[in-house]
Image (cartoon, rainbow, N blue to C red; front, side):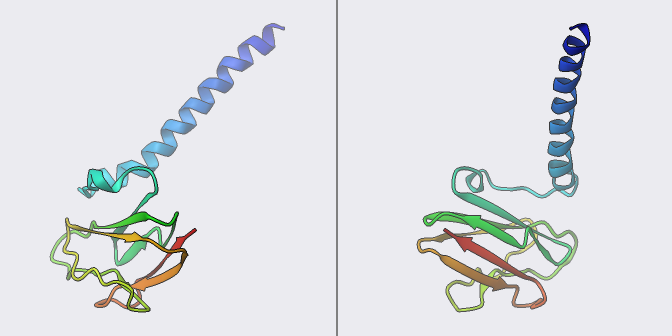
Length: 129
């Protein structure tokens, strides 16, 4: 019985520490790079896509109809602005300069592929359920 009582607090502590380490792994690189996510990008039925190192992170996001995706350009230095441009001409963010963002709301269900106009190898997908 004593072993069970000792093991339980250790399991709880291990679980708590793993939560903190996961959270740190997700937030530290963003904070260290000076990437500012607008408060309006966070909440129910919202997704954030970071643009860093000529990549969309994550490159696939899922939201429900009526939801909003916000792209945040986290590039540093004198990098040419990126875009979030639909492959089917549904939307085009225009230039998203480093340190700025663009939000797009999706009213209908579907899978929406997009790319960066100046850097067409950058690609992503928004899946709306």
